[in-house]
Length: 252
Ligand SMILES: Nc1ncnc2c1ncn2[C@@H]1O[C@H](COP(=O)(O)OP(=O)(O)O)[C@@H](O)[C@H]1O
Ligand SMILES: [Mg+2]
Image (cartoon, rainbow, N blue to C red; front, side, top):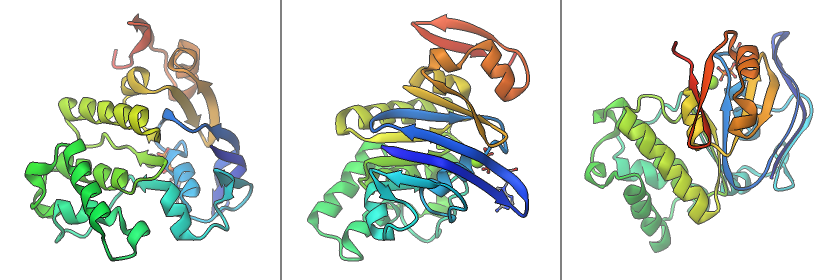
């Protein structure tokens, strides 16, 4: 479980997160949704210690994020950043291999190599394995980055807008891959999604943020109500039900 307790954050007196207390249970797909600037990336970056905690505390399976050695944390939790800049003169296979670094510290063994091949297969990247990152399309690069995050082999995967740059086919496929990874390998995915309907269709739980506060938290049917969506996104939208899940007509 990831336990977030009384976490606030500000940058130069500008409040970003307000006293967030939240438990993210192990297993399943949790979607973080909310408008630009809500604090979604800030929250993920605090969980992954990409920036220091200012107040409160965060525990990952009981380990305090503030004081756990980086290598140990990297064996539990992997993050795909929203602005994931990568060295361009790497092949896709090499990039994915970097996911194993916290486990072998530079000396990949047979098991690490097998896991890289499995990640190439899981994300259907075999045909691109020898391509340099800077020759890929935005969507292909995004898939390679998700595969690297997966290859780290951690219980928790934090993915900040992994559907960026993906076409409909690959967005759907990525969400289905996450579902099978979560169900078959008992992983936990915490995913920032802009497409509310991807969250509606694929998440077990949705946490909606606005202005650094949790506005709603629960199943898709609990969170995606007309009132909640208006509170979070600032306008009213119609909601339909398809196969027991909400479908938000957010574009009308
Ligand atoms: N390093 C920073 N310095 C100053 N302000 C920041 C910094 N990082 C984020 N912010 C601000 O914090 C707020 C939340 O940002 P962010 O967490 O990226 O939101 P989201 O991911 O939900 O779009 C925004 O208003 C953003 O401008
Ligand atoms: Mg963000």
